[in-house]
Length: 265
Ligand code: HPA
Image 1 (cartoon, rainbow, N blue to C red):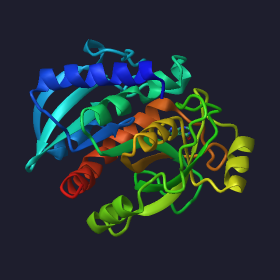
Image 2: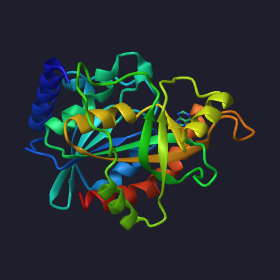
Image 3: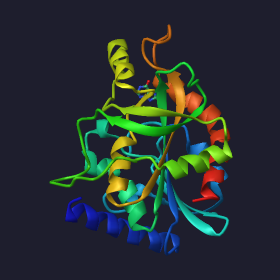
Image 4: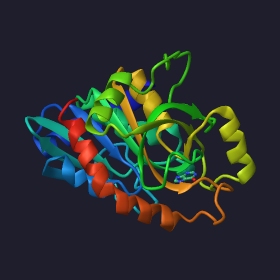
């Protein structure tokens, strides 16, 4: 990353720690569309800081993304919960998209759990179910890295963290996540292309944050909540409100999974 991005993330982390009174965090949980109710299962809620109060954060534009960072005490460890994220389609560039993750890592988090809402390209990945991200295909055309920075992505999503998640829920399936820039949903032809490429899930977040976390050496776990069948694979059109509603209905269960993961990272 550029020195400037690093310095801004460090300043944001320092200010965050002075607001929350916590010196160092164990892990960070980025809550995607509809996942916010699941945050309550993570532990005892401490201080909550609006992202807009910290250096480098943009006010998020989308409904369902309130834009706050919560400090949570989970057993004997402190966790950060990022309620809301910046998406590439908002037009502020990749550095803005990954600033939350960089801030969390600068505040000590060595594990980053990225959650999102996704469309399913595989009939076995049913609406309402959480799916572990085994790998991603970054089709955003963007990267959070500048210059000759050849970060290894052979194991972007930690196999050992996926095993921890499966210990908590043996039924969890895995899939490859295709990251699109959006904001439009895909065409049926694009979905056929993504299937041919080996994608099982499609969404508009997560990949750039995972790359930024790997650059910093943090371990990454990715979990998609399937909110809809991808375009052209069912007989009804896609609707953002439906995505949010499905997310909300399923997020309470998903909270139990996050709590089990928090206990083991
Ligand atoms: N496509 C892209 N992003 C999404 C979808 C989808 O079908 N569902 C939730 N986020």
